[in-house]
Length: 86
Image (cartoon, rainbow, N blue to C red):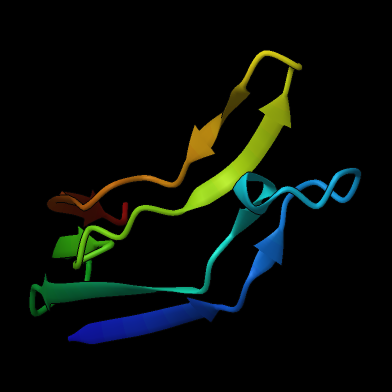
């Protein structure tokens, strides 16, 4: 079993104008995973849940003069990963 937490304080994404829309408020991301390994330790199955609480956070922002554009971090994602060592 594994869990990790990442906390970020306020981040200024553009320093030119200091517009409140050009910064990101503090946020916390929590991820969980659980792995099962066979007896030979060659095959592993991992289930994961990233951004467990579906936090919206900006990764960058651009002002083209007519409005703001940018990217947000990934939403809640989950899945399975199967790996095998040869």
